[in-house]
Amino acid sequence: MKRHLWFALKSVAVLACLLAVWQIAVVELAIPKYILPGPWIVAQAVIERFPELASSLLLTTEAAALGLAGSVVVGVAVALVFAQWRGLRQLLFPYTILLQTVPIVAIAPLVIMWAGTGVYPVALIAFIICLAPIIANTTQGLISVDENLIHLFLMHNATRMQVLFKLRLPNAMPNLFVGIRISAGIAVVGAIVGELFAGSSRVGQGGLGYAITYASAQLETDYLFALVVAATVLGFAFFFTGAFLEWYFLHNWHESSRSDIPE
Amino acid sequence: MVTSDAKTAVAEVAVDGVSKQFRNGALALRNISMRVDKGEFISLLGPSGCGKSTLLRLVSGLTHPTSGAVKVNGMTPAGARALMSFIFQDATLLPWRTVEQNVGLGLELEHAARSVRREKVAKMLELVGLTHVATRFPRQLSGGMKMRVSIARALVSRPRILLLDEPFAALDEMSRDRLNEELLRLYREEQWTVLFVTHSVAEAVFLSTRIVVLAPHPGRIAHVVPVELPWPRTAELRLTPAFEHEVSRISRLLRGVQAEALAADGGTA
Image (cartoon, rainbow over the protein chains, first blue to last red):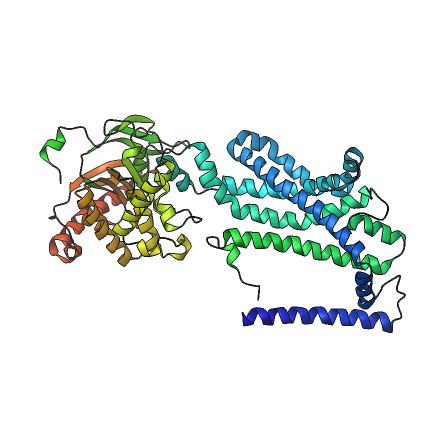
């Protein structure tokens, strides 16, 4: 416990130093506030425009969470199908890699064009970007089962479904969580990219992506920074929620989730 | 252990002219015939590549012979699975299940009622001395304890035939000896028929009623040797001259088989 506290203190100290250097540099070099506002001004922007910021943050959170949740449900379902039919897997698996390599910025305008604006099309973009890591990792976990364990199940005349749900699926849980950790980070990116194109259904109301476009057009650099801070915090929150869930479900039995805070 | 009328009854395990060729063309076993009667404890002993594990898997029905037939209690191996339990070289426990959940796996797969399951598992844990770790996960156990869980899991469905594939190979000698003694105690109580794959002569001598020595490339039966040691066998038996004598007798046979294999390899290479 004491070591954790010490680690937290050191982290905070590093952050404080960075902020101090930033503040001093801005003041000493007399950088105009529309080019680079100091942390103090950014903090003021956060406080002054908090309701606006919070509603943007909430919208983006909703879209990213929907997209991520959808990708977990669909991704696991696809992986289960892939695990059952080898031929289908070999035929279709390369396309999941295609899904991963298509630049999301390029397809976001298309999705918006087809699906319109609002939270669901944005969630759809987050979903698309999240899907491939979930499918790839979960499939890997489902098919890489110790052969002796399969034999053990066969010795008990286990059905295909018993092998799938009592052996393959639990075996794939650590892999699924690796996928979730990867996707949690990019879900937020996907949602923000979506919002860049989706704009807003009502003037002045939109997610972080929309607010970023708006603030940049207005040259509200201080608010732009506030939005960057909000987006970063959101990304962290997603990542740590994923990491917490992983710990919660796996810490009893799996090695990876027992690691301490890195030294 | 072999009673006179057992010979006339249906063999527990009958292997009849079995050959096994792998998909890569390698001949693992050639023309194996053996008969195992109820209550026998047979060790399959031999150098690596002699197909002893393959033979065990043929009996279990996990693989099928290329030619010849295997019968278990008059049935096909796959049809007789309910009579058999298989113990693997590694403990092969499910890491996400506790000890008791692991032991109850087979009953669960066979849809036994929860209350029946709980009662049987508790009794089995007691029998192998694992009650105090019932709610632990495998990662919290030593290698010997894990193997014990694996044995408990195999025994909980009360098999008639036990198939063991080098179950104690990865353990230190002390744990191995102790588990051997426990296995024998349970064998005496439960009256199983046992097929036991090992490459330890001492282990085979200590446990078996008969030892089948296999020769490699291709796998075939070289010797079938009854073990001439009295029952019941306890830890002290290992210290007797009679035991030493049996071990050296079997060792010599095994060494002969190995020398032959080496000579054959040298000849063809």
